[in-house]
Amino acid sequence: MKKQLMVITVILLIGISGWLLYDNKSAEKTNGNTKGSTKGVQPGFEESSNTISFGLLDENDKVVNNGSILEPKENKLEYTFSLSNFIEMERDYALIVLDNFKQIPFTVQGKQYNVYPFNAKANKTVEFKTSISVKKNTSEIDYLVIKKPNYFTEKLDIPKMHSLQEILPLRFQVKNNSQKQKTATFTPEEMFNEGTNDTIFISKQKEELTILPTERSGEDIYISVGNINEEKENYNIIALSNWKQVGVSIVSWTHFS
Image (cartoon, rainbow, N blue to C red; front, side, top):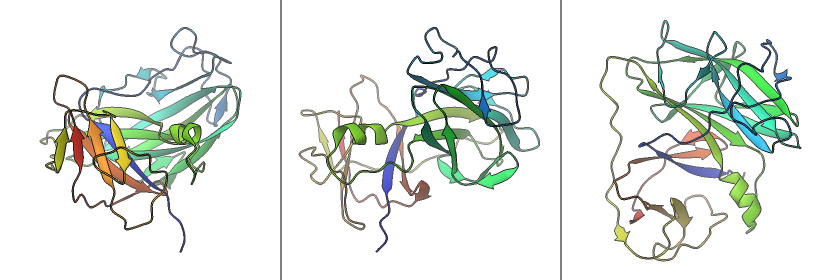
């Protein structure tokens, strides 16, 4: 049986996570993929600074602030995606787009993709034009950047697993006249006030958080979600198989507070 990678991502609904680090003044606009930009938007984010900076640019090459409200034109969102790979190595990336937390196709340089893979050379900036068709009820659009999309591990290798779990998000509200989309809610099977409190953890046991690098398809696992803040947080859970969204059956889950 062909193996498939299942990635479960939790998206925090309160607050905006991710970086928007890009210097539109230092970049030269081109119609290609690789550019010679040498500085990021914050001090220290420049060539050989061991940083990754990314974001959206509007039609005037100005940075679109992460978390801002996007206004569709003729039901489309058209922006330039930019990523500065200011590290000393070449790296593969992949881009996916979510509409109200559901994966949708999008257009890059005039061609449609569900998952757009791209490569960034060491200390180079990659740019490409994107176009997204939105619906009347679209209230949020998310751009998710996956580092090393083909870099998997089947063994308990903590450094590699740490790299795999890092997904770089950009989240935007979309201006429309419809009501905000409601998401499904679940009641945790159990709530714990003691023990390890990770933001998200996938384990075989609900009482003990033991790292689970792999699991067979169809087996039950526990998703533990922790909140160390004083205020209530809302989360959305999506599941990806080979970077394409799939359904997930929530039988029970645990919550650490």
